Length: 281
Image (cartoon, rainbow, N blue to C red; front, side, top):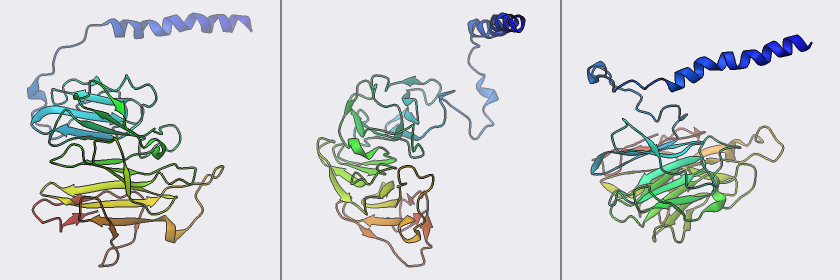
């Protein structure tokens, strides 16, 4: 039995030698742009960063984008994706990102919601974060109990007015769900949309030319501790669609009108130039 063990131990350095040599090899130069000219879409990174859960760009700075990952924090590019660098590593308490929004009126102000939409166990967050220096430094600004924040909207004219969609805890009854609003840059929050302690908000959408009209989607987000599946409840588990005409202060549910029953995760887009009358789900 000892001879095979010895052979296996000897095989380890032999197997890793090509990998070490590969990592030490010089990197190749830039790719010839002519090779990419015919491509409509291409991967611009960050490479080997896993799936991307959130992206936001800076108005007036066409090369600046921020990308969030379910387990790798926030990354930034200033070269339209040619190179990326991490900007969230100073935050040691959480690395799962659910939403990013750069303030349209101030590219230095960035809001980040922690907790990826699709991470129910190992990718939970601890609330909202904010940067006022284009991602160089960050501070926590509340909503600790929300665990998953999949959407953020910042007022197009005032970087201090923010809406946040929060799913809340997956395995507990919780009031930290729904849509939260801040008018002081995240110093304080008011919950303006709440369904119940098992239903959270997942989507926020507006048209840039009708910023006071906002749509939100909320769905059932709870499973009993120890259970593998939620208890079937068709009435409660449906996805609900809401509309606000006053910038998220008040909401009413949209029912009927030919709208088919919704279920599960729902995305919303509002068409520009339609006075927020054309909406896609």
